[in-house]
Amino acid sequence: MDETTRQELLALEAAFLDGETRNNPGWLDRTLAPDVVEFGRSGRVYDKAALIAALIAEAPSPVPRVEIVTPAVTGLGPDAALVTYRLEPLVEDAAPSLRSSVWTRGADGWRLLFHQGTAADPAGGG
Image (cartoon, rainbow, N blue to C red):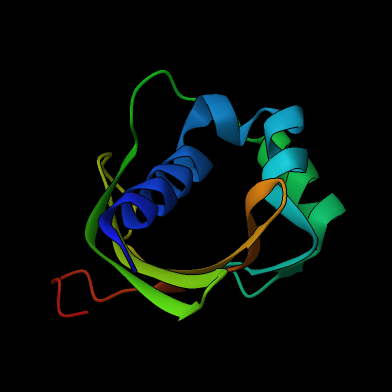
């Protein structure tokens, strides 16, 4: 995976977590693949419509509420990549999580095909 592609995918991942884009239905529709699946940290499974509805329902935050730590981008083929990282909350009473996303590239650019959030060890062990 070249550095330009790596940076592009990490920027998309950060945008997916950012309040302005996370609550923007147009951005979400363009960025989420038609058959996207998310396994939420809660254990709930979301399709595209449910994921967009859930994200739009969140209150947007004017300041960052999370930080991506130890990101890794692994190529899965010429037009697919796995992005993994630890998400650290920047607010009290929030728990860290481990995240993984599969991105695929088509004629219209990168689209999120799969995302999963899993509870992480608060001590930072994984």
